[in-house]
Image 1 (tube, rainbow, N blue to C red):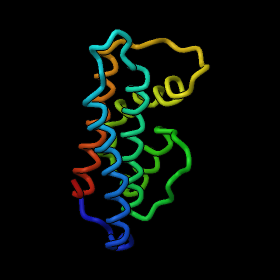
Image 2 (cartoon, rainbow, N blue to C red; image 1 turned 180 degrees about the horizontal axis):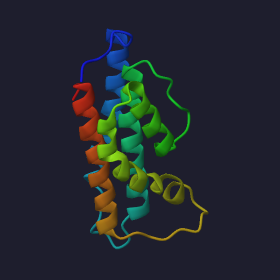
Image 3 (cartoon, rainbow, N blue to C red; image 1 turned 90 degrees about the vertical axis):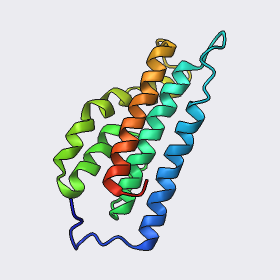
Image 4 (spheres, one colour; image 1 turned 120 degrees about the vertical axis):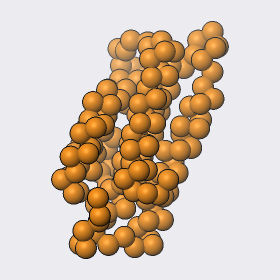
Length: 144
């Protein structure tokens, strides 16, 4: 897909988008080191951070195309904003992944909520899903 003229990519916007995408990469690198073999692995926190990595990647996409970055962590809203930039139906390819990652943010990130503990396999799956979002966004932006 070519970028319409009304969305010229400036060096500044590209740099800012790369900062968001780099944050996503840093988080994913940290998650690769998660201590899953420990007696009480931080699986809920891992899943919450996988959500954040996907959030950062999508916010990088919005930044690149001069879209307002929402000051919330609602992956569904951020996803819809990304999809609306060019009415790009390719985003349908990651809709289910984004929806699945979406519930990890609030449920697992804030202490005090009644929450289930997920197992290491589900936490690893959350990391895998965050990588899918990251790879999709990197392919779309060609910044990766």
